[in-house]
Length: 449
Image 1 (tube, helix red, strand yellow):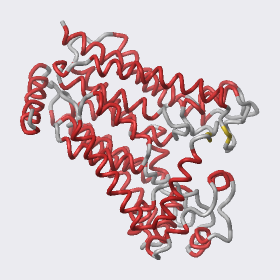
Image 2 (image 1 turned 180 degrees about the horizontal axis):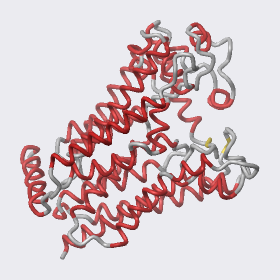
Image 3 (image 1 turned 45 degrees about the vertical axis):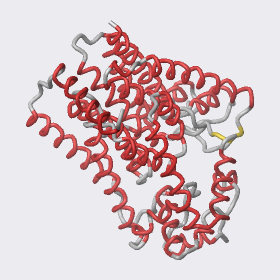
Protein backbone atom coordinates (compact mmCIF):
# COMPACT_ATOMS: atom_id res chain seq x y z
CA UNK A 1 0.00 0.00 0.00
CA UNK A 2 1.32 3.43 -0.97
CA UNK A 3 2.10 6.02 1.76
CA UNK A 4 -0.70 8.34 0.55
CA UNK A 5 -3.21 5.48 0.67
CA UNK A 6 -2.05 4.58 4.16
CA UNK A 7 -2.56 8.14 5.38
CA UNK A 8 -6.05 8.21 3.86
CA UNK A 9 -6.84 4.87 5.54
CA UNK A 10 -5.50 6.13 8.88
CA UNK A 11 -7.61 9.30 8.69
CA UNK A 12 -10.64 7.23 7.73
CA UNK A 13 -10.09 4.97 10.73
CA UNK A 14 -9.81 7.98 13.02
CA UNK A 15 -13.05 9.42 11.61
CA UNK A 16 -14.81 6.12 12.27
CA UNK A 17 -13.49 6.08 15.85
CA UNK A 18 -14.68 9.65 16.42
CA UNK A 19 -18.10 8.86 14.96
CA UNK A 20 -18.41 5.78 17.16
CA UNK A 21 -17.46 7.72 20.29
CA UNK A 22 -18.55 11.33 19.77
CA UNK A 23 -17.27 13.76 22.43
CA UNK A 24 -19.96 15.16 24.67
CA UNK A 25 -18.05 17.85 26.56
CA UNK A 26 -18.55 21.39 25.13
CA UNK A 27 -15.39 22.76 23.59
CA UNK A 28 -15.83 26.08 25.39
CA UNK A 29 -15.87 24.28 28.74
CA UNK A 30 -12.77 22.30 27.81
CA UNK A 31 -10.98 25.49 26.80
CA UNK A 32 -11.93 27.13 30.11
CA UNK A 33 -10.65 24.18 32.15
CA UNK A 34 -7.46 24.03 30.10
CA UNK A 35 -6.85 27.75 30.65
CA UNK A 36 -7.41 27.37 34.39
CA UNK A 37 -4.97 24.46 34.59
CA UNK A 38 -2.38 26.31 32.51
CA UNK A 39 -2.77 29.36 34.78
CA UNK A 40 -2.30 27.18 37.89
CA UNK A 41 0.77 25.56 36.35
CA UNK A 42 2.21 28.96 35.39
CA UNK A 43 1.51 30.22 38.91
CA UNK A 44 3.49 27.32 40.36
CA UNK A 45 6.25 28.07 37.84
CA UNK A 46 6.46 31.70 39.00
CA UNK A 47 6.33 30.68 42.68
CA UNK A 48 9.22 28.25 42.28
CA UNK A 49 11.43 30.62 40.25
CA UNK A 50 14.60 31.42 42.20
CA UNK A 51 15.83 34.95 42.75
CA UNK A 52 18.94 36.32 41.01
CA UNK A 53 21.01 35.98 44.16
CA UNK A 54 20.62 32.20 44.42
CA UNK A 55 23.11 29.76 42.86
CA UNK A 56 22.15 28.09 39.60
CA UNK A 57 20.96 24.49 39.99
CA UNK A 58 23.76 22.08 39.12
CA UNK A 59 21.78 20.43 36.34
CA UNK A 60 21.15 23.70 34.49
CA UNK A 61 24.66 24.98 35.23
CA UNK A 62 26.10 22.11 33.15
CA UNK A 63 23.99 23.19 30.16
CA UNK A 64 25.06 26.82 30.54
CA UNK A 65 28.77 26.03 30.77
CA UNK A 66 28.50 23.60 27.82
CA UNK A 67 26.87 26.38 25.78
CA UNK A 68 29.72 28.75 26.69
CA UNK A 69 32.29 26.15 25.61
CA UNK A 70 30.43 25.68 22.31
CA UNK A 71 30.56 29.43 21.65
CA UNK A 72 34.30 29.39 22.35
CA UNK A 73 34.93 26.37 20.14
CA UNK A 74 36.15 24.33 23.11
CA UNK A 75 33.84 21.29 23.08
CA UNK A 76 36.87 19.09 23.70
CA UNK A 77 36.66 20.33 27.33
CA UNK A 78 33.22 18.75 27.90
CA UNK A 79 34.28 15.24 28.93
CA UNK A 80 37.34 15.79 31.08
CA UNK A 81 37.26 12.87 33.52
CA UNK A 82 36.03 9.27 33.81
CA UNK A 83 32.37 8.65 34.56
CA UNK A 84 32.67 7.49 38.17
CA UNK A 85 34.81 10.47 39.15
CA UNK A 86 32.57 12.87 37.26
CA UNK A 87 29.44 11.63 39.01
CA UNK A 88 30.80 11.25 42.53
CA UNK A 89 33.36 14.04 42.91
CA UNK A 90 33.05 17.83 42.56
CA UNK A 91 34.03 19.16 39.17
CA UNK A 92 37.83 19.25 39.11
CA UNK A 93 38.95 22.78 39.96
CA UNK A 94 41.71 22.81 37.34
CA UNK A 95 39.48 21.63 34.48
CA UNK A 96 38.50 24.12 31.78
CA UNK A 97 34.85 23.23 32.42
CA UNK A 98 35.12 24.33 36.07
CA UNK A 99 37.16 27.43 35.22
CA UNK A 100 34.55 28.51 32.68
CA UNK A 101 31.82 28.10 35.28
CA UNK A 102 33.71 30.13 37.89
CA UNK A 103 34.25 32.87 35.33
CA UNK A 104 30.48 33.43 35.43
CA UNK A 105 29.96 32.89 39.14
CA UNK A 106 29.02 29.20 38.91
CA UNK A 107 30.65 27.25 41.72
CA UNK A 108 29.26 23.77 41.00
CA UNK A 109 27.79 21.88 38.05
CA UNK A 110 26.73 18.37 37.19
CA UNK A 111 28.82 16.30 34.79
CA UNK A 112 27.68 16.91 31.20
CA UNK A 113 26.56 13.57 29.73
CA UNK A 114 24.93 14.62 26.47
CA UNK A 115 26.17 14.45 22.86
CA UNK A 116 28.39 17.34 21.75
CA UNK A 117 25.69 18.84 19.50
CA UNK A 118 23.44 19.40 22.54
CA UNK A 119 25.94 22.01 23.80
CA UNK A 120 25.16 24.07 20.69
CA UNK A 121 21.43 23.98 21.53
CA UNK A 122 22.23 25.86 24.73
CA UNK A 123 24.65 28.28 23.08
CA UNK A 124 21.94 30.97 22.52
CA UNK A 125 21.05 30.87 26.22
CA UNK A 126 24.74 31.10 27.11
CA UNK A 127 24.82 34.52 25.44
CA UNK A 128 22.80 35.78 28.44
CA UNK A 129 24.03 36.17 32.01
CA UNK A 130 23.47 32.99 34.08
CA UNK A 131 20.32 33.92 35.99
CA UNK A 132 18.35 35.41 33.03
CA UNK A 133 19.42 32.38 31.00
CA UNK A 134 18.00 30.08 33.68
CA UNK A 135 14.68 31.93 33.83
CA UNK A 136 14.45 31.89 30.03
CA UNK A 137 15.24 28.15 29.96
CA UNK A 138 12.53 27.43 32.54
CA UNK A 139 10.00 29.47 30.60
CA UNK A 140 10.88 27.67 27.36
CA UNK A 141 10.56 24.34 29.19
CA UNK A 142 7.09 25.29 30.48
CA UNK A 143 5.99 26.28 26.97
CA UNK A 144 7.35 22.99 25.60
CA UNK A 145 5.41 21.11 28.30
CA UNK A 146 2.12 22.79 27.33
CA UNK A 147 2.89 22.26 23.64
CA UNK A 148 3.49 18.57 24.31
CA UNK A 149 -0.01 18.10 25.69
CA UNK A 150 -1.52 20.07 22.79
CA UNK A 151 0.29 17.74 20.38
CA UNK A 152 -0.88 14.65 22.30
CA UNK A 153 -4.50 15.65 21.70
CA UNK A 154 -3.98 14.56 18.09
CA UNK A 155 -2.08 11.37 18.90
CA UNK A 156 -5.10 9.23 19.84
CA UNK A 157 -8.00 8.01 17.66
CA UNK A 158 -10.78 9.65 19.69
CA UNK A 159 -11.38 11.91 22.68
CA UNK A 160 -7.96 13.50 22.19
CA UNK A 161 -8.59 16.95 23.73
CA UNK A 162 -10.41 15.47 26.71
CA UNK A 163 -7.72 12.86 27.32
CA UNK A 164 -4.88 15.38 26.96
CA UNK A 165 -6.69 17.69 29.40
CA UNK A 166 -7.14 14.87 31.93
CA UNK A 167 -3.47 13.95 31.61
CA UNK A 168 -2.37 17.58 31.94
CA UNK A 169 -4.51 17.96 35.06
CA UNK A 170 -2.72 14.95 36.55
CA UNK A 171 0.82 15.88 35.51
CA UNK A 172 0.92 19.68 35.67
CA UNK A 173 1.83 19.80 39.37
CA UNK A 174 3.18 16.25 39.68
CA UNK A 175 6.62 15.49 41.17
CA UNK A 176 8.17 14.51 37.78
CA UNK A 177 7.08 17.77 36.13
CA UNK A 178 8.14 19.90 39.10
CA UNK A 179 11.53 18.16 39.17
CA UNK A 180 12.03 18.77 35.45
CA UNK A 181 10.85 22.39 35.44
CA UNK A 182 12.72 23.24 38.63
CA UNK A 183 16.09 22.83 36.93
CA UNK A 184 15.02 23.31 33.27
CA UNK A 185 15.82 19.68 32.51
CA UNK A 186 16.17 18.42 28.94
CA UNK A 187 13.43 15.91 29.82
CA UNK A 188 10.77 18.49 28.88
CA UNK A 189 11.87 19.02 25.24
CA UNK A 190 12.42 15.25 25.13
CA UNK A 191 8.75 14.76 26.09
CA UNK A 192 7.73 17.13 23.28
CA UNK A 193 9.77 15.07 20.80
CA UNK A 194 8.00 11.90 21.94
CA UNK A 195 4.60 13.58 21.58
CA UNK A 196 5.46 14.68 18.03
CA UNK A 197 6.64 11.13 17.28
CA UNK A 198 3.34 9.65 18.52
CA UNK A 199 1.21 12.18 16.63
CA UNK A 200 3.10 11.62 13.37
CA UNK A 201 2.65 7.86 13.72
CA UNK A 202 -1.07 8.29 14.40
CA UNK A 203 -1.43 10.26 11.15
CA UNK A 204 0.77 7.82 9.20
CA UNK A 205 3.44 10.41 8.49
CA UNK A 206 6.18 7.81 8.58
CA UNK A 207 9.19 9.93 7.68
CA UNK A 208 8.28 12.69 10.10
CA UNK A 209 7.72 10.10 12.83
CA UNK A 210 11.13 8.59 12.16
CA UNK A 211 12.81 12.00 12.30
CA UNK A 212 11.21 12.82 15.68
CA UNK A 213 12.14 9.38 17.01
CA UNK A 214 15.73 9.73 15.81
CA UNK A 215 16.06 13.12 17.52
CA UNK A 216 14.58 11.78 20.79
CA UNK A 217 16.91 8.75 20.75
CA UNK A 218 19.92 10.96 20.10
CA UNK A 219 19.03 13.15 23.09
CA UNK A 220 18.21 10.28 25.48
CA UNK A 221 19.42 6.86 24.39
CA UNK A 222 16.64 4.66 25.79
CA UNK A 223 14.10 5.49 22.99
CA UNK A 224 16.29 3.28 20.78
CA UNK A 225 14.16 0.37 22.03
CA UNK A 226 11.21 1.81 20.06
CA UNK A 227 12.88 0.12 17.10
CA UNK A 228 11.35 -3.11 18.40
CA UNK A 229 7.86 -1.60 18.19
CA UNK A 230 8.50 -0.20 14.72
CA UNK A 231 9.66 -3.62 13.53
CA UNK A 232 6.71 -5.39 15.17
CA UNK A 233 4.26 -2.99 13.44
CA UNK A 234 6.26 -3.03 10.17
CA UNK A 235 6.77 0.71 10.11
CA UNK A 236 9.83 0.41 7.90
CA UNK A 237 9.83 3.98 6.57
CA UNK A 238 9.78 5.39 10.09
CA UNK A 239 12.61 3.04 11.07
CA UNK A 240 14.71 4.11 8.09
CA UNK A 241 14.00 7.81 8.67
CA UNK A 242 14.97 7.46 12.33
CA UNK A 243 18.24 5.78 11.42
CA UNK A 244 18.97 8.55 8.91
CA UNK A 245 18.20 11.26 11.47
CA UNK A 246 20.44 9.59 14.05
CA UNK A 247 23.26 9.39 11.50
CA UNK A 248 22.88 13.10 10.64
CA UNK A 249 23.03 14.05 14.33
CA UNK A 250 26.11 11.86 14.77
CA UNK A 251 27.77 13.69 11.87
CA UNK A 252 26.77 17.03 13.41
CA UNK A 253 28.35 15.90 16.68
CA UNK A 254 31.53 14.99 14.84
CA UNK A 255 31.53 18.32 13.04
CA UNK A 256 30.91 20.24 16.27
CA UNK A 257 33.30 18.45 18.61
CA UNK A 258 35.59 16.36 16.46
CA UNK A 259 36.21 12.63 16.51
CA UNK A 260 38.04 12.49 19.86
CA UNK A 261 35.25 14.34 21.70
CA UNK A 262 32.53 12.15 20.17
CA UNK A 263 34.54 9.01 20.90
CA UNK A 264 34.96 10.12 24.51
CA UNK A 265 31.20 10.66 24.84
CA UNK A 266 30.44 7.20 23.44
CA UNK A 267 33.00 5.76 25.88
CA UNK A 268 31.22 7.44 28.79
CA UNK A 269 27.93 5.89 27.67
CA UNK A 270 29.56 2.45 27.72
CA UNK A 271 30.96 3.16 31.19
CA UNK A 272 27.45 4.05 32.34
CA UNK A 273 26.00 0.59 31.69
CA UNK A 274 27.36 -1.35 34.72
CA UNK A 275 26.62 1.47 37.19
CA UNK A 276 23.46 2.60 38.91
CA UNK A 277 22.47 4.31 42.14
CA UNK A 278 19.91 3.57 44.86
CA UNK A 279 19.54 7.35 45.32
CA UNK A 280 15.89 8.36 45.80
CA UNK A 281 15.24 10.19 42.47
CA UNK A 282 16.35 7.11 40.49
CA UNK A 283 13.09 5.34 39.59
CA UNK A 284 14.45 2.39 37.61
CA UNK A 285 13.87 -1.26 38.41
CA UNK A 286 17.60 -1.58 39.09
CA UNK A 287 17.41 1.20 41.70
CA UNK A 288 14.45 -0.50 43.36
CA UNK A 289 16.38 -3.76 43.63
CA UNK A 290 19.44 -1.94 45.01
CA UNK A 291 17.39 -0.15 47.68
CA UNK A 292 16.06 -3.38 49.09
CA UNK A 293 19.15 -5.58 48.76
CA UNK A 294 22.38 -3.57 48.75
CA UNK A 295 22.06 -1.92 52.15
CA UNK A 296 23.08 1.41 50.60
CA UNK A 297 21.28 4.48 51.91
CA UNK A 298 18.81 5.66 49.23
CA UNK A 299 18.86 9.16 50.73
CA UNK A 300 22.57 9.77 50.10
CA UNK A 301 24.11 10.15 46.64
CA UNK A 302 26.21 7.09 45.81
CA UNK A 303 27.19 5.28 42.61
CA UNK A 304 27.48 1.50 42.87
CA UNK A 305 28.39 -1.27 40.49
CA UNK A 306 25.36 -3.56 40.14
CA UNK A 307 26.16 -7.13 41.26
CA UNK A 308 25.81 -9.63 38.38
CA UNK A 309 23.13 -11.71 40.14
CA UNK A 310 21.03 -8.62 40.82
CA UNK A 311 21.58 -7.30 37.30
CA UNK A 312 20.38 -10.59 35.82
CA UNK A 313 17.34 -10.67 38.09
CA UNK A 314 16.32 -7.20 36.93
CA UNK A 315 17.10 -8.11 33.34
CA UNK A 316 14.82 -11.16 33.51
CA UNK A 317 11.99 -9.02 34.89
CA UNK A 318 12.50 -6.52 32.05
CA UNK A 319 12.56 -9.32 29.47
CA UNK A 320 9.35 -10.77 30.88
CA UNK A 321 7.63 -7.38 30.54
CA UNK A 322 9.05 -7.06 27.03
CA UNK A 323 7.75 -10.52 26.07
CA UNK A 324 4.23 -9.63 27.21
CA UNK A 325 4.45 -6.24 25.47
CA UNK A 326 5.63 -7.69 22.15
CA UNK A 327 3.07 -10.50 22.30
CA UNK A 328 0.21 -8.05 22.82
CA UNK A 329 1.48 -5.75 20.06
CA UNK A 330 1.95 -8.57 17.54
CA UNK A 331 -1.44 -10.12 18.37
CA UNK A 332 -3.22 -6.79 17.80
CA UNK A 333 -3.97 -6.84 14.06
CA UNK A 334 -4.29 -3.67 12.04
CA UNK A 335 -8.04 -4.29 11.80
CA UNK A 336 -8.22 -3.57 15.54
CA UNK A 337 -8.21 0.06 14.42
CA UNK A 338 -5.97 2.92 15.36
CA UNK A 339 -6.20 1.89 19.02
CA UNK A 340 -3.83 -1.03 18.47
CA UNK A 341 -1.03 1.30 17.37
CA UNK A 342 -1.69 3.93 20.04
CA UNK A 343 -1.95 1.45 22.90
CA UNK A 344 1.03 -0.57 21.71
CA UNK A 345 3.24 2.51 21.45
CA UNK A 346 2.11 3.64 24.91
CA UNK A 347 2.91 0.22 26.34
CA UNK A 348 6.40 0.34 24.82
CA UNK A 349 6.94 3.85 26.20
CA UNK A 350 6.40 2.66 29.77
CA UNK A 351 8.67 -0.34 29.25
CA UNK A 352 11.40 1.82 27.66
CA UNK A 353 11.54 4.05 30.73
CA UNK A 354 12.24 1.04 32.93
CA UNK A 355 15.04 -0.47 30.85
CA UNK A 356 17.86 1.91 31.76
CA UNK A 357 19.78 1.36 35.03
CA UNK A 358 19.11 5.03 35.86
CA UNK A 359 15.65 6.47 35.14
CA UNK A 360 15.42 9.77 36.99
CA UNK A 361 12.23 11.21 38.42
CA UNK A 362 12.23 14.01 35.83
CA UNK A 363 12.35 11.40 33.04
CA UNK A 364 8.88 10.26 34.12
CA UNK A 365 7.40 13.35 32.45
CA UNK A 366 7.35 11.02 29.42
CA UNK A 367 4.66 8.96 31.18
CA UNK A 368 2.22 11.69 30.11
CA UNK A 369 2.18 10.09 26.64
CA UNK A 370 0.93 6.63 27.74
CA UNK A 371 -1.30 8.27 30.37
CA UNK A 372 -3.05 10.28 27.66
CA UNK A 373 -3.58 7.18 25.54
CA UNK A 374 -4.98 5.27 28.54
CA UNK A 375 -7.33 8.15 29.39
CA UNK A 376 -8.58 8.38 25.79
CA UNK A 377 -9.29 4.65 25.71
CA UNK A 378 -11.19 4.88 29.00
CA UNK A 379 -13.32 7.72 27.60
CA UNK A 380 -13.94 5.87 24.33
CA UNK A 381 -15.05 2.61 25.98
CA UNK A 382 -18.83 2.50 26.30
CA UNK A 383 -18.82 0.20 29.31
CA UNK A 384 -15.74 1.00 31.34
CA UNK A 385 -14.79 -1.74 33.76
CA UNK A 386 -14.33 -0.78 37.38
CA UNK A 387 -10.91 -2.46 37.31
CA UNK A 388 -9.65 -0.06 34.64
CA UNK A 389 -10.92 3.00 36.48
CA UNK A 390 -9.39 1.72 39.71
CA UNK A 391 -6.01 1.26 38.01
CA UNK A 392 -6.16 4.81 36.64
CA UNK A 393 -6.92 6.20 40.12
CA UNK A 394 -4.13 4.12 41.68
CA UNK A 395 -1.72 5.33 39.00
CA UNK A 396 -2.49 8.96 39.79
CA UNK A 397 -2.20 8.43 43.53
CA UNK A 398 1.15 6.65 43.24
CA UNK A 399 2.50 9.35 40.93
CA UNK A 400 2.09 11.83 43.80
CA UNK A 401 3.46 9.41 46.39
CA UNK A 402 6.88 11.01 46.03
CA UNK A 403 5.43 14.11 47.69
CA UNK A 404 4.63 11.99 50.74
CA UNK A 405 8.23 10.74 50.83
CA UNK A 406 9.54 14.31 50.79
CA UNK A 407 7.33 15.20 53.75
CA UNK A 408 8.34 12.23 55.90
CA UNK A 409 11.16 13.26 58.23
CA UNK A 410 12.54 12.43 61.61
CA UNK A 411 14.93 9.86 63.02
CA UNK A 412 13.62 7.08 60.79
CA UNK A 413 15.33 8.50 57.74
CA UNK A 414 16.22 5.04 56.51
CA UNK A 415 12.96 3.42 57.49
CA UNK A 416 11.14 0.92 55.33
CA UNK A 417 8.26 3.39 54.96
CA UNK A 418 10.43 6.10 53.44
CA UNK A 419 12.19 3.58 51.22
CA UNK A 420 8.81 2.37 49.97
CA UNK A 421 7.50 5.90 49.38
CA UNK A 422 10.61 6.75 47.38
CA UNK A 423 9.64 4.21 44.73
CA UNK A 424 5.98 5.21 44.28
CA UNK A 425 6.53 6.83 40.82
CA UNK A 426 8.05 3.54 39.67
CA UNK A 427 5.02 1.71 41.07
CA UNK A 428 2.81 4.19 39.18
CA UNK A 429 4.60 3.30 35.94
CA UNK A 430 4.06 -0.42 36.56
CA UNK A 431 0.34 0.16 37.25
CA UNK A 432 0.04 2.21 34.04
CA UNK A 433 1.77 -0.58 32.11
CA UNK A 434 -0.76 -3.08 33.48
CA UNK A 435 -3.69 -0.80 32.58
CA UNK A 436 -2.45 -0.37 29.02
CA UNK A 437 -1.82 -4.11 28.66
CA UNK A 438 -5.41 -4.83 29.68
CA UNK A 439 -6.72 -2.14 27.31
CA UNK A 440 -4.72 -3.49 24.37
CA UNK A 441 -5.89 -7.03 25.06
CA UNK A 442 -9.48 -5.77 25.25
CA UNK A 443 -9.12 -3.87 21.96
CA UNK A 444 -7.77 -7.01 20.26
CA UNK A 445 -10.57 -9.18 21.67
CA UNK A 446 -13.23 -6.65 20.54
CA UNK A 447 -11.78 -6.70 17.03
CA UNK A 448 -11.78 -10.49 16.93
CA UNK A 449 -15.40 -10.60 18.11
